[in-house]
Amino acid sequence: MFKTEWPKHSILAIAIVATWLKTYIVYKTSFSITIDNALQEFILFINPLSLVLFVYGISLFFKSDKGKNRYLVIATVISSLVLYANVAFYRFFSDFITLPVLLQTNNFGDLGSSASESVFLTDIAYFSDVIILLFAIKFIKVNTGSIDSAKAQRKAYFILSAAILFFNLGLSETERPQLLTRSFDREMLVKNIGMYNYHLYDIYVQSKSQAQRALADGSELVEVNNYIRSNQADASEEMFGVAKGKNLIVVSLESLQTFPINNKMNGQTITPFMNELTRDEDTVYFPNFYHQTGLGKTSDSEFLFENSLYPLSGSAVFFTHSGNTFHSLAEKLGDNGYHTAVQHPNTKSFWNRDMMYESLKIDEFLDINSFEIGEGDAVNWGMKDIPFMEQSVSNMAEMPQPFYSRLITLTNHHPFFLDEEDKFIGEYDSVSGTVNRYFQTVRYMDESVEVLFEELKAKGLYENSIIVMYGDHYGISENHNEAMAQYLEKEISPYETAQLQRVPLFVHIPGSGKGHVNEEVGGQIDLRPTVLHMLGLETAKDMQFGGDLFSEEHEEFVVFRDGRFITENNVYAGNLCYDRETGEETDAAECEPYIDQALMELDYSESIITGDLLRFYNKEDGQLQPNGEIMEIEK
Ligand code: GP9
Ligand code: MN
Image (cartoon, rainbow, N blue to C red; front, side):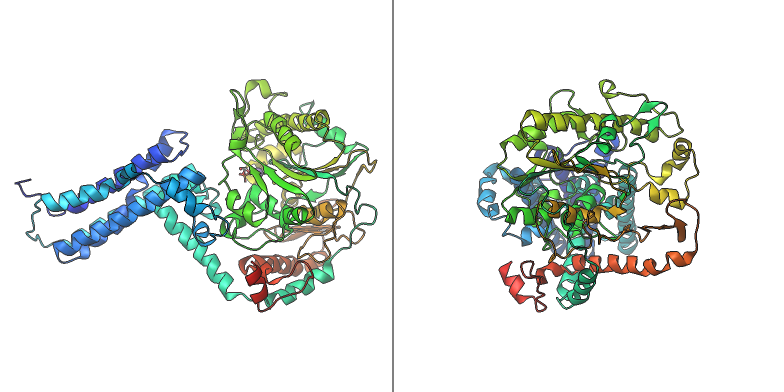
């Protein structure tokens, strides 16, 4: 067809361009990847390139043209299959493939049947680069004369491909800081590092956890079990069963810290409704309650709540260990006749929730598709909390009772933007726009909590439910210390920073008269036993690190994910020991005994997760199954 000779590496160049452009076109046509700005679009455009250059470039090492071409065809077919498999999977699950879904087919029994319904003849277009390549090989005559600078050329080529990879990663890092360590969302990963790199990254993450799991055996549990049993607190006699058989409504209050509660900003009340709750006769309010999250932020708080285990130190456990065996709060409630549901108007793959919720045995996940987001109903990260509360309650009205419904709010999230009509108070006046706006979004959140209560009453659900609400993690990071120092009118020492990790906890039991301010020092790790005991369910045989906050035996010892801790008398932060009440530095000996205990507790919890040790634990009789076989078969 073509008479003239084409340059030596034309076939390679054609293959690269064909796959690159095809991938970009497929991104745009077959997935719904949200693009917010031109930079994101640019990253999406260039992200297939680095790996394609690298993999196809290996053909440069082949001696014969035939070998080269054959390799290129195989490489294009494989990359097309990877892309196409994702397209077919996405049609059904609106998500990208991750290794565990291929391995845990029992969770996805309908995969096979749905796959066949997701395949069409026209899908041949997804292999267009293979077709183009085959044509090129057949009809293009390339100059085979060897200009022998092959080695130097190859070197330059691979340096270029590495440079493109780093350029891509650099751009992604500016767009999404900590993308790879936090790895919060598959869509975000595909959007930033590209489909092909995403799969390599996924394989790396998953095989690392699989290897650790394979090396673990149940014997490690003996020591952990002894530690847990010797530190365990009995249920509170007064509160055990106080809400037996009632619905459990849990609200994760996005980025809400304790400091705005019962506080003012430039004379304006920030949380009028929640302030009332702190004095309410049916509400127990905990002002000395801390979050214990790490990289996984909201998802870590969910993990703490459901499992009473610490999240991981180096990654988001929702992402890396969603295939583990867990004995979650949801599972226990499910076993006791509850319908269990999480409501959160965001993409279901965010924080890998869709996968993790399967392992946590949550019956129903009402994600963004379960909500109607009308005009003006979205701001910042998505659906506004007020319409979210309204629709969540309507959803609850449809649920079989008793139910456990956990709501995850969204509006009070960095960067704390609001529409004009939702600003109920003015901004603060510090150097930090983030801090200034935070007060307004917290004020909006307060309004949404009030709406929740009203709606529950209107729908007749209120009387028969208990409502547990807690801040999921800090909203204002240490980057805003100057503004916080201005607001709090004190210097932000390591002590203050630790104290700023307090998040409010409200336990509201309608008609109980149990309301009081409870000064107990506690953390998110304590939520699971506290809540289960109120619902009249024992946890004495559970593998959990927290204790019932109402129990006389509850130990005031809150360990942060990074080893800082709070005790009844002390705050240990920045390697210094402080008096908890005064904030004055104290004798290091007061903290000393707890330093190792804190690290040990974190290590024990980490070993449960990385070794997937709960598969060796019989939750019914509390027996360890060191050889693991019995539990494995049951699974
Ligand atoms: C996203 C929401 C916020 O679904 O949970 O996540 P965060 O950034 O707070 O972890
Ligand atoms: Mn959050």
